[in-house]
Length: 170
Image (cartoon, rainbow, N blue to C red; front, side, top):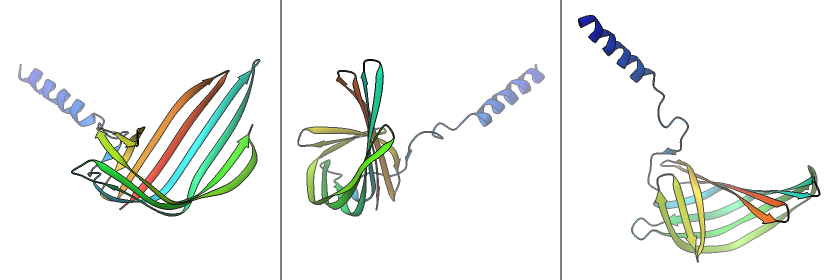
């Protein structure tokens, strides 16, 4: 009986010590979101597939921020969020893998205010009724990284996937 108990204890210890950590592949959340965050990078990608008579054509658009001077302030007490500042966008479009054009569109004096909610790993922003949901990839004392991705069927054989990845620091 004593050998059986030792074997059971050894097996339990083996399974416990060899189990995978729960958050190895999950988001890294070790801080609160309240405070002032400075935009470090912003990348928006739009991938369109249009199918007509059995043939598919793809169009990709990528927008990346530069000359960034933009902050977001998340209030702890009221769940209000305010974004203020400016940045430029370099926009590149390609059709069937061939780059068609590249230009920049400077955004200046951008100001937005709304509310936010956090539920586990989802950050929901509501700016004037325009609700955006982001997956929190990382939230530490110095870094906030979020991602949004969704696909929309526009009908007539056209499907668009939108992906936004944004990184802030404080």
